[in-house]
Amino acid sequence: MSAAAPPDQRTGYVAIAGRPNVGKSTLLNRLVGAKVSITSRKAQTTRHRILGVRTDATAQFVFLDTPGFQTRHRNALNRAMNKSVTDALASADVVIFVIDGAGWRAEDAAVCALLPPRLPVVLAINKADTAKDQGRLMALAARAAAERDFSAIVPVSARTGKGLDDLVAAVAKRMPTAQRMYEDDMLTDRSERFLAAELIREKVFRLSGEEIPYGSEVTIEKFEEDGNLRRIQATILVDRPGHKAILLGPKGERMKRIASEARIDMEALFDAKVFLEVWVKVKSGWADSATTLKGLGYI
Image 1: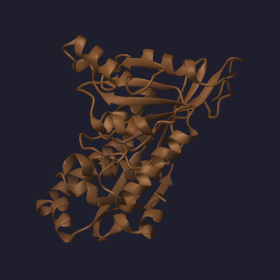
Image 2 (image 1 turned 45 degrees about the horizontal axis):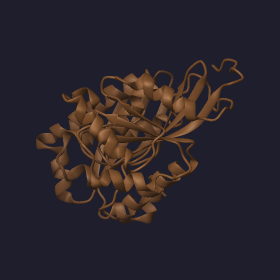
Image 3 (image 1 turned 180 degrees about the vertical axis):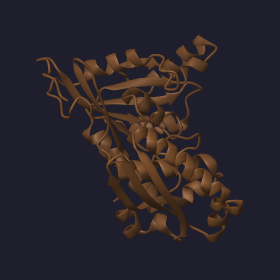
Image 4 (image 1 turned 45 degrees about the vertical axis):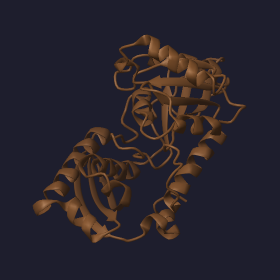
């Protein structure tokens, strides 16, 4: 529950932006202290704007995890994802711009150019724990600073939590003084139904090949809550019959593993017993269908 906020309480929207696959979702989960955004080693895992809330004694951070800005593929889904990035930036008070400690890329420069000039931007150099040469990190920070006058530059590790206290402090200084927007124990504004679909989609990304995840989506057909039990029926949409066969795997073994691992994560996140059924359905062209994308909450 919410406690009395101090008079100098800081509260603000903090957009987490960056090119695909730099660790934005892992960073959000670490900052919030719970898995509210799915992750995988594949780029473009995040498709929706995810809100995560962190509250401490003097500040409430409302983090907006955004999809990696897509500059190559231009189907309706990617256009909708890019719009969610620009919308998040438009509503933010502060931006955390995440780059990979391995080096600066042209895609980093492209996303950096999209950041509104009026906003304070804190540069987070992720995966700093894997850098053997600190001089290389300093050179990377200097290279990034040539693109923009950042409010602060903080090396971090979303995986281990290294540097996160410094990052939080740097962001808090740039947030406005305002009352809290959410209860102290709130972690996200997303429903369990939405999170269930995302956890299944995460397992599709993690347990299938390179092509399948980008041509698939998850819909929840039924979500029933009965005390400490959740009964969930879900459908994975795929573009092609061949994708369905691959996703099912020999004797349905891959799909069984996807459903099992998703159910385990749901039970941990919901703190409840979950009964989960998952089917696969072919729906060609779903990523370019305005009707389908609207039903999935993208537009």
